[in-house]
Image (cartoon, rainbow, N blue to C red; front, side, top):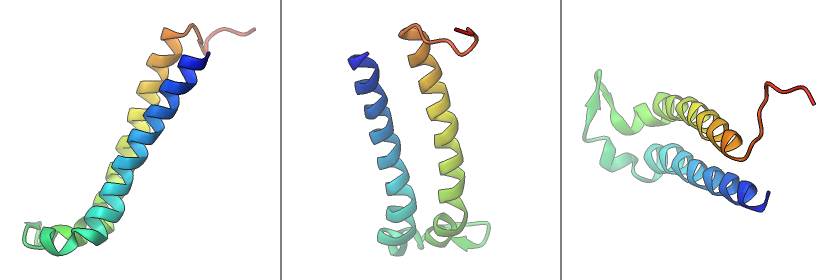
Length: 83
């Protein structure tokens, strides 16, 4: 049980760091550097602030689901059983 929660918290920490780097880092901190690149006519820093961070957040949700399903199976927790 302890290893389950330790792994779960590690997953959360890694995913939250990625989310922070994309939303705050790319959208605010590194915006000026990213604005030299354009996507569809828009500056990349602006794109991350408006669209990219949302897309990455949705991808992180699906990644967390996949990671947790794998972790649950590894530790013997199964949603299909009705105990």
